[in-house]
Amino acid sequence: MAILDYNIQAQIDCLSECAYDKSKRKEFYSCLKLHEQAWSMYPEPKSNWNEAYNTAKYAVDDSFKMLDLDNVKKWLNRMIYINNNLHQSDEELTHYIGKYKFEIKDYQGAFEDFKNVVQVAGMRYFDNEPSKYMDFYLHPEKFIYNE
View 1 (spheres, rainbow, N blue to C red):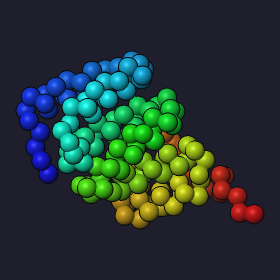
View 2: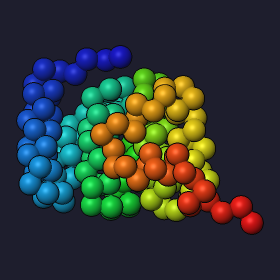
View 3: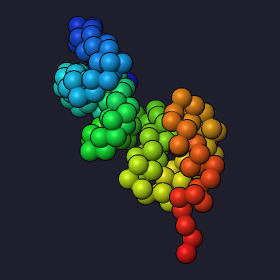
View 4: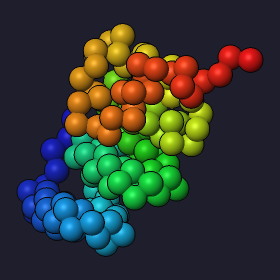
């Protein structure tokens, strides 16, 4: 894995800290603009940078907070792009994909993703998440109807 130039890393860190502050104040669209600025600073190919994965993940988290599923999908695809190269966060990424599928009401797909994550990593990815995801995983019959 490559190491970012110190000055670039410092600028990205500053943008990320500002984005975090905006997120805490629920200024999500301003926050996403800062994530986009940080993303643009990673040299190509962006798939070489673990830090870029983190930027995308933070943007996905903020997009989920406002249920902006278009932005979730955009940033999730960036996470996938990086993880396809680095393969450092397979279970975490699958959990995020499951959350997205849940929100778009692809309950069968979401359940399969969550099940795959739990088989490998246990229930830890549900920690610090809205309870609706764990409730869904534990009680899929509330959402998935066998006809």
